[in-house]
Image (cartoon, rainbow, N blue to C red; front, side, top):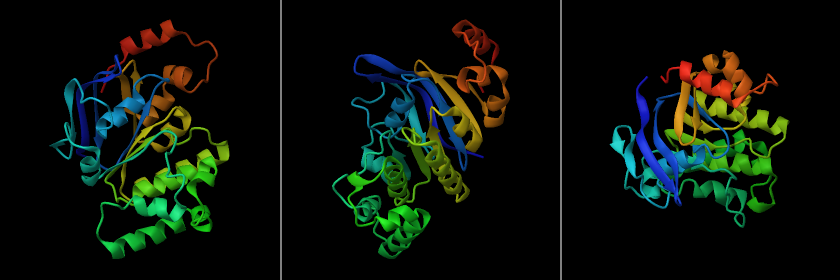
Length: 258
């Protein structure tokens, strides 16, 4: 597999705080890469930096998509290159209908016949959205809004879909449903960069995973390696009650970033 997205030594300020501190990672063509980490680790800032949504350009480093630098590009131009972003909190257009929200995802496209086909496909993929297509998006449940946000992003026909905390605030049953959709999307050929605090679910769908801490990546490997490692199971899957920060620091020192 070749790298579809490359982030190299990026430093990004969030206000006066250095939110990314030399972050480097590659997302390979066709994979699901899960990014794990605690609140404030820099996960959301990473996605916003890639999409050109941070207030200032990265202080250092580069972001490349298919070898093309994204630094300095406007968000809409980045989206036109084939990146789509579903932010934390969904951010649907609350006073537009479900159908209008989906159509907004295709705003940069001109292939009307294909747009109509994709719209029918989204409504078939999300039957609850089909039932509510004339309903204001703001009146949907949290799970339905998440489905709508994902469907809207897919209407752009992205090569890379970036998802920020898609399970946030959802019931266990809806979380399973959303992650089943993520698997399906990836099986159809869409590369996915997944930021998620539900490490168990993220590792169940991803091929590779990486852990962020204080704005940089500190661990990486295949999802199976991270899921099976006893230390990762302790600190990110909560399978042992005797976790200690010192123990995790020792663990990080003995691991090699790859």
